[in-house]
Length: 115
Image (cartoon, rainbow, N blue to C red):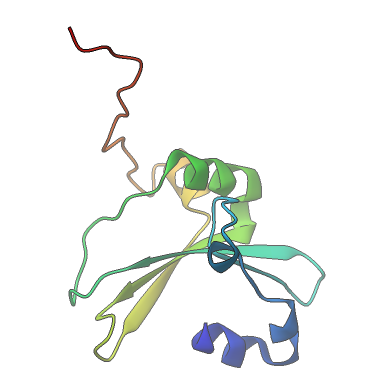
């Protein structure tokens, strides 16, 4: 949040931290950019110094599809110890153009009964 506030300057007043308010729009943070367009940020963090993958929920992937170029994943490593981050803009579009690999990693099982 601090990095985003510093980068946005006076636009920082438009930042909304959805996850703090219990909102689940498919991203953690949004703000309005210079052109008046909503930008969405999903944050994925790890205490490890490197990561090779992370999980997106169905809701997050749906939001990435809907928002396209206005959706960015911030991947933060070394959380708590000199954090570094990288950004993946439009992950859904990158996936559709075969420039990013996205595959299901979990399936929810429900509607069962024990005998």
